[in-house]
Length: 428
Ligand SMILES: *Cc1c(COP(=O)(O)O)cnc(C)c1O
Image (tube, rainbow, N blue to C red):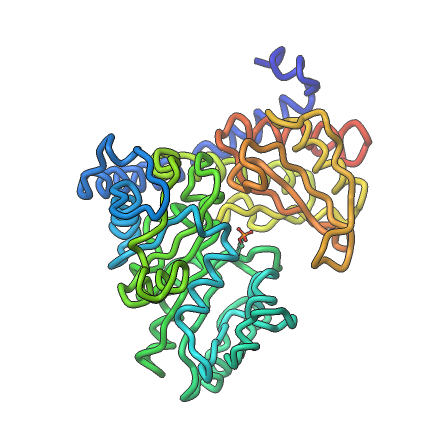
């Protein structure tokens, strides 16, 4: 085995250190396997109940009337995530699009949107109009309020209560920390927040941005009172196979609104050709629990490695997990760059390119990104990125197999090791 790794540039010291860390995580991995097993059964059960057949993998074009694959897939998503209905489409281009769709279709002029968990994901700032943008909710007369989390990451119930008023129509709850420094919310915590919100205003729509959270736990937010969950198919539920797409699942009325907005009033879910990619959606969902399992093991392994080497990691290797994101804070630009170059060097695609920090639209500093993916921009595949500014933290996620995630992390360590950016004494 060591020879295999050596042939790709991993030295004996790094390899052996990795083996020790992996050995120490055995127990943890067993628990993750149990979650994956539970969720695998959940997915198979939904597919059987909704009678998935080979016919579902056929293609439609044009209007896409009576697309049995599309309609069955949506029924499977609804069943799997405990929704009354679902919208799962290649015409939803990404997670941001799915979230924008869910918001714009369920809010009307004069309504107010509330985020009780602080600032939402970067790209939503333009959707909401926090950052002025053409077509934002603000342009349509939809106002926005926010209640920040308390310093310890808990909900500011007092402020949330004060923020809810007669205009509050929809509450958006982001499950994953995304690229913010706050804890990711467990499904249980999300349930507590929803109960609180509904105790103040019963008919408010509670939407959960479920990106990076699917299949990490045994329960999903619709099971604890959410009305809508929203996510991207090039993250967890696409299982690495979906080449595009987004989903919304939940209350029938919410999904109906979204469908009429995605296509057209009067048409709704009835149109939308699937263009021959249904098999990847079904098979991706089937694989998703084990792909998420691989990504979680990779994240825990990375936490174990870098925690032992004295870096700040979030979450820690022993902490409970509610999404697949792992952050490592280097406090050092060189180390951060070396980490990303290692991830890139371990990729099956584009392994020969060298990531360089670069300016990116929407960011106030250069950003470095590592990704060698089959699906461009897919972050269920092994990837890492971070803004080049203090504290020089990298956000790391994905890995379709644990072996690949492990190799990527060892390669990242190899790069740091070669440049003397780690305390080698801590590796023995
Ligand atoms: C990725 C992500 C989004 C946006 O998804 P895109 O597919 O990148 O547009 C929104 N919210 C969270 C929490 C995310 O992780």
